[in-house]
Figure 1: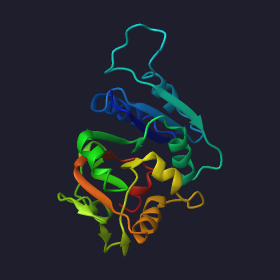
Figure 2 (figure 1 turned 135 degrees about the vertical axis):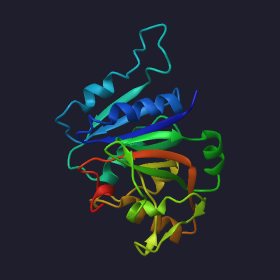
Figure 3 (figure 1 turned 90 degrees about the horizontal axis):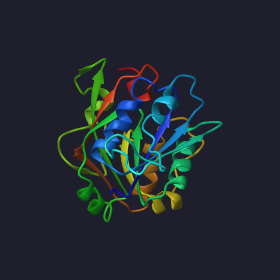
Figure 4 (figure 1 turned 180 degrees about the vertical axis):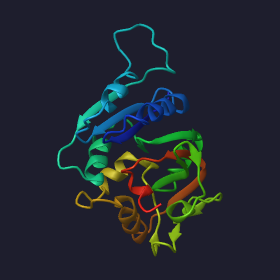
Length: 223
């Protein structure tokens, strides 16, 4: 069993959330999923419940169901929702996944070993626009095919990090939480502080997701 807690923030993500959860179950069977819902008004939560394992059944297909916890958040910010999810996590390894990202590759044994050295590992995002992969320009240009330690973005003139697909040690985030006031880029500001304090972050392109277009997705703005 994978002792991993996967944290998914949700705000009207009915188009992709089922695919995201399915990718967790297929790539990391036995993982716990924590849904932090920001007042969704569509079918996102009902879709997520289709994957909820019933503990009263003696047999459930491990590739169809998993343990899922549901929480609602008021006065949402990205950092506040992530801190909540990490606090509620049962496991030491916390995987933050966007509700519109689909895991395509993850070597959890490697990641567990890398977490002994790095304070976070974030993966390659392959942008998919309405079913078609697009050229990795703008923010997508950061997701190169080589590992990088403490990736520096010339585009943003700061260290780069991205929480659409990132893995952390739970206790370290509890001791070094995300900013709960910022309305976006909580990952970048967290990275600046962590690196300034002498820690390291790893970008691993072999850890990969398809990042699907959503009209309100912050990564897609201006693309």
